[in-house]
Length: 225
Image (cartoon, rainbow, N blue to C red; front, side):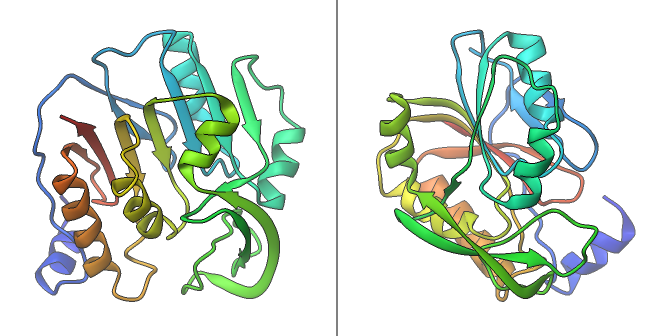
């Protein structure tokens, strides 16, 4: 842990989180887009959902290359979709132009305040502008019904602050998820540390235990045990 983050933890502007479950792990993807999986029971038949693509699918491609599995990827935002259209994508990478939320319907996605950035957000936070686009979103169980899945082996979620409502919905829905990989955005959200702590508690209460914490403390990996 670097000194800057340690000082933020001391003044309660960052979150200290401990690993709660041990397993063999592997970190996949480029720096800034990497997530850590537990390698137990992952093979070509594993069901993977990846929410929040942006312009970096290195995590998804690494999973495909190593385990020969299919990845269902989701991002309804215009810069991501434009980028995807210009890529030569692996056959096992399937993308869908709608997003994840705690409801079925249409949501406003606010564009990044910095025009060089790609990430839109459903949350009005310190990194976005007042400009927005409308896009379709669905609850996780609705998406699973649409795609014909009754379980998910790995769910990756980098959805710019919408993770809090989605986690609340997941923990109330009895959805079977083996591993949940989340980038928390408490640094951008009002009362963000409190919301992240509550989400971790909700997941712990639903038998999800932390098996990895990134150096930034923002990417957490959970196993259903």
